[in-house]
Length: 291
Length: 332
Image (cartoon, rainbow over all chains, first blue to last red):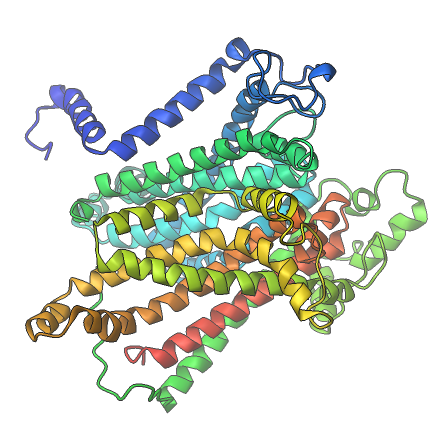
């Protein structure tokens, strides 16, 4: 559709396309706005959060919503809103880290398997199959147990566990792309394999990855929450949404309302990532426009 | 890419197992072997991720020299990698998953004790996912783009995004603490007290089923919508067949095979999610076993649980594949 546009006008047309998408897809636009707002709040956290996240105000322990503590306070009197803001930072960082690791491992492996074919493909595919037989969190817990407990180790584990999913997807896409005429042409011109992969195969195989990455961010967020809830992720006193839930769980009988803020935060953020992913799938895939 | 709907010429219920099908089953079995072998390799390789001197790290702080030597012996850490792996695999194949470093109980015994609790919750959750998800999917697909459809899809989106364990906490807060209808935590062996076991397993199963319900409803809806808008179904409409009969006789029959795939996928996901749900409900299942082991770096237990879970998943996938090839006449 942008074929007739002159190069100098490419950028505005991209903006226009984005604007059209933003107006036409209410749910996608809402999700994107929510996520952008969340990221901005996380970055501004130190300046906008009412209290430091680990500051204890024992008089306010397990206090309900008050003017002083908008969302109440936990059992050590730490302000829930502040911890929610800082916890969001940790949770988002963890999700992006895990997905970045999954992309860094999964995409090259998938492209290599799909492009080289033969025994390389066969070997990689079997390994990918084996990894996919492991229940994700269980393997992540085992890897965390081996590497040592902590948020970064936990998310490295989650990234390793997610990588095979991406590898399988990229491989399937590469199998299609590698037989395209332009790849043949590049090969005839004597372009090196590395350059073919980087300049011709990867850009054309990456589209479903973008969608999958968005969906994986939701999965990674839930994984972080799970690991931190179990005590295998972030370590006290640092907050993350999962760790806040663990704290709220211990005080569930006295102050059940403490489990709503972090739970709802996880729910809405995961929902936003999933909805954005689905919107992008529709927007990027012309055959799905009518559904 | 939409597959043509199956037109089944045989009488209902006549599932034929031919020689060709048997050979497919044989081939699937053969294909599963390398996956199992590679999985054992991954399970054993986990040990290699432990930083530093494995024996020293696993023995923990202030461990005696004797303890370190003991652990070195368990894993044969002073020998070459493939000898270590071979020994471990040989013992594992004979049911010896070695002993816990903490309680020195045989790992296989721990697994045998914990597995029934986990299996009960997961099978109950799978059942719930199907019982609730299928009607939702049918309701949505029979009137696409109606408010029913939008409502079901909205619920499904929530079901996928909600953290299972948080849902579990909400269920405990309401049904157990507030209303006192069901026990909040713990588990009872099914063999001793089936009714009590089900009562204990219900809330965790509901918490676990949320994502499954959503997944079943979505998958069923999308494959039903595809079939109901196919040429074949248009012909049936033209023939004057009532819509309900088209939905039940021709629609559902064609998508039932797709559900098999969803079920095996869900089993894998639920085995993962149950780990956290078990923590919420204090159920002494596989999840609690592996979490405690990971905390204490009780590595034989970690490896044993992961291995057991992989075997379950691989077995289920194999079963699905076989059922698939038996049920679907196109595969031959």
